[in-house]
Image (cartoon, rainbow, N blue to C red; front, side, top):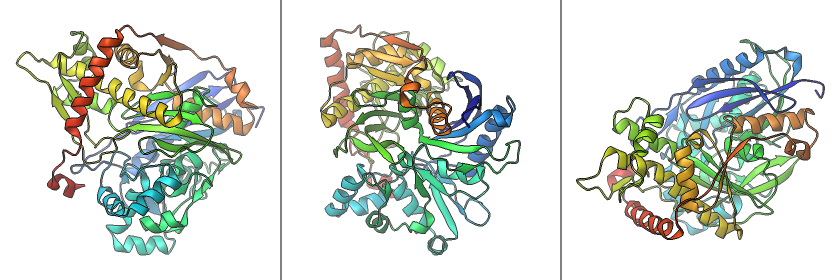
Amino acid sequence: MPGSRYVIAIDQGTTNTKSVLLDRTGKVRHRSSRPVHISFPRAGWAEQDANEIWNTAREVLKECFDQCQANEVAGIGISNQRETVAMWQRHDGAPVAPCVSWQCQRGADICRRLKSSSRAEATVLAKTGLRLDPMFSASKLAWLLECDPQRRVRAEAGELCAGTIDSWLLWNLSKGHIHGTEASNASRTQLCDIRSAAWDEELLGMFGVPKSVLPVIYSSNAVFGETAGGNGIPAGVPICGILGDSHAALFAHAAFSPGVVKATYGTGSSLMSPVASVRTDQHISNTIAWSLNRQTQHALEGNIFVTGAAVQWVGKLLQLQNPAQEITELAMRTPDSEGVHFVPALAGLGAPHWDASARGVISGLTLASTSAHLARATLDSIAFQVRDVLEAMETAGGIEISELLADGGAAENDLLMQIQTDIIGRPVVRSASRDLSAQGAAWMAGLSSGVWSSLDELKQIPQEVTRFEPKLSASLREEKYARWKEAVARTLGTSTAADRALV
């Protein structure tokens, strides 16, 4: 609907669901948010309520529609937490299990079983660009089917649907008429060949996932269908742009071509950089950034499991009421952690280490150590993990990055951004947008629906940024980084056999 004034995007994240209403100039006219709970029923497990996810999405979407007329909205876009898996009944949409979160390690035994075959591991890496790891969706789906034999029978009979969170939202928005996903989300499942952007029979067989349970894969800018209406959401509005949240953030940075890297700071963090072709690497993932009219843009990505979540964890440990604010206030009391290191391997370590058995370690404590030193070490840990991934990404891509683009909730912390630029020794350019993933999905929806005509037009939308420059000397920076790597080495392979049995 080229004449329409607005696009709306849902941004469904790990800890909250947001929506934004954007006008044709790219300005946010309204935003809404609801918290989403996550539970940890046992060590290594993380799960969410599928109905809560949908209900929060429905509520925030309604708030945006309340600000305009339905015929003024050209389309709805979706950005979503990725790898998290939902499974529901085809006939009535009722979930058959909690959503298994991307943070969940319950598929670790399945991954270890597959790793016993070097051919299986090599096949997964070659076809998906991803290391065998329980973060990705395939082992989660396999676990859901293995833990309940009747569930497998029903899945093979076509009675069950499964998918990432975009699929769950699409299903509910259309009242069961659309069981779909798009290329960037599909590429994070380990069931999709990233060269063809299609489900792969060999991978499906390897993980024991029947194709009948999976959604149809569309381009990111496809018109997936229309809203069915109800609950304050009008019927007939096109759903026409979907991206995984990290991909959406990259898109909203207008990083449409190789040579740039962005870091999204959230519960975990993702660094992503567009590349011209698939580059298989043991330390850095290859992924589909997006697909426009079936033309695939590939990207390198490094996933860090725990960054913002580390701040929340330490805040809980210290019994702080507002961890994000109070950790920063504590950290500002000292210019240095004075040898204290916190490696937040609270859900294993992701890129570039990929060690699901790693466990968190706080080291370097002395009688002089205080809560301020631990707070500083917590912020340092985010910056150090980003440098780990940035360097691995440069090696994998054969590129040298001159600056780092930053976004996400934790990126609003000026102290963290200064620590980050000091640790990498390069400028950090932070987007002023609080809704970059949502903005990326809205841009994709607007591109699909004719609100914007091209990527070049999107590039012309003004973007407000803040630039941070390094202040730390090169010698001190490298000394700090060497000590960090020593701390990381203490965490690798630290879980016991009993720990492994729990995941």
